[in-house]
Amino acid sequence: MEVRFWNKEIETLDRPALEQLQLKRLRETVGYALQTHFYKNRLAKTGITSPEDIKTLADLKKIPYTTKDDMRESYPRGLLAVSSDEVVRIHTSSGTTGLPTVIYYTREDLDNWTENLARCIIATGAGRADVFQNMMSYGMFTGGLGLHYGAEKVGMTVIPIGGGNTKRQIQLMKDFGTTVLHITPSYLLHIHDKLAEVEVKLSDLALKRAFIGAEPHSENTRKKIEDLFHIDAYNSYGLSEMNGPGVAFECEYKNGMHTWEDGYIMEIIDPKTGAVLSEEMEGEIVFTNLIRRATPLLRYRTRDLGYIIKGACPCGRTHRRLSRITGRTDDMLIVNGVNVFPSQIEEVIMRIPQVGTNYQIHLEKDGALDKLIIKVEIYSKLFHGEMSELDNLKRKIKEDLRASIIINPQVELHEPGSLPVFEGKAKRVVDNRPKF
Ligand code: AMP
Ligand code: ZN
Image 1 (cartoon, rainbow, N blue to C red):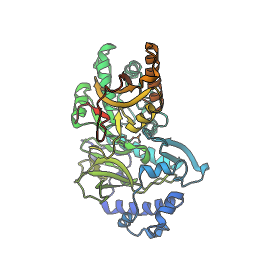
Image 2: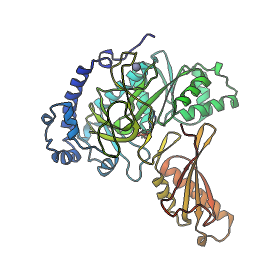
Image 3: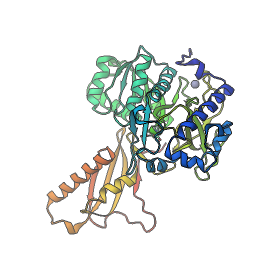
Image 4: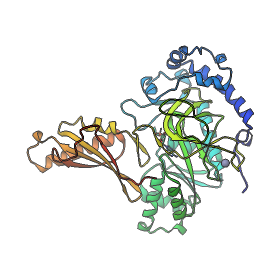
């Protein structure tokens, strides 16, 4: 296999040189972090008051972890390290209760992010001859714009359609000869189901590759996608707190995701004790930014679980590989690529007076897509027996949920006392989607 690189020098840097670069950049990043209210206070307690206090990479361990709660408490500007005239973009994370986490980018931050994505794209064997249909949502979600700029950088022809509207997606794939897709695995499987319905055959399409990510999926799901479409599918991982997509991506060997270690220090920790684990041990993934000025995050706990794959990749890239994401340390659900916390749903429905005391969140597969069903008991005292009252309530719950969690749930109303009651910890979430 002929291996192509976007930035061969950096992508194949030997370990000592890579660590040297990491140390230099860690010092710089600590310097930026000290410009923020949050880290100035936090690091003062550890005795780190200037970049010079970081002497070796091992000094990273002196820095306490940063959590999602820290980020929320710093909303909106507590983690901003540059003056506002240097900021050229803001993204926020999806799926947070109350305040979102916010990431600011300078021009340089965006360029560095784009460079990472250019490396990812080339690593899969795709390139300037490709027609790239970006089916991830644009907007505050980082999935759309992140890949968009990377794809333009390498010279692909970009179709910036964003998510949804399956018929039109298929039409564009056909008309423009799309060769590469960026999409969630569940949506891609759904598209396969729709092809027959719109009378489009695989031979009408020119598909070669798909970048699949934003939600957990198994090796079998990848295989299924590859078999159904006769394409290669590459796992793409990222999170808005670390810019978005492009943190880790599979190369043509598809044996784990190269994490760009000149941009991030990756650690795996025991989520209970916080102890750093060795390679091949599964734990919570923690990242430290190395090339981000506007919102530098130190030892950010992602709540994603995975492990570092030992050994060298045949492609020659020296940046270590992350396994598939094997789970989460919290109760976050990912529904068709959108992050949802059960507490967000509760917050919305419990605000509505006609809703009773009990509810359940069900997740099912509807073909390839996830279906979210909210079962809610009604508060009968506020009803007078008109059907229209129930219809109105259903509509109200649906609309409020859609505004809050950005997905369209199915709502079922139930008689008071009819949903299961739990004496201990309530089991609100019933996830019937197949496990992998
Ligand atoms: P967001 O910050 O909204 O972009 O969501 C990021 C989260 O999506 C991550 O922390 C993961 O839980 C999930 N995620 C993103 N990419 C993948 C992937 N390739 N496999 C599994 N989960 C993913
Ligand atoms: Zn590789």
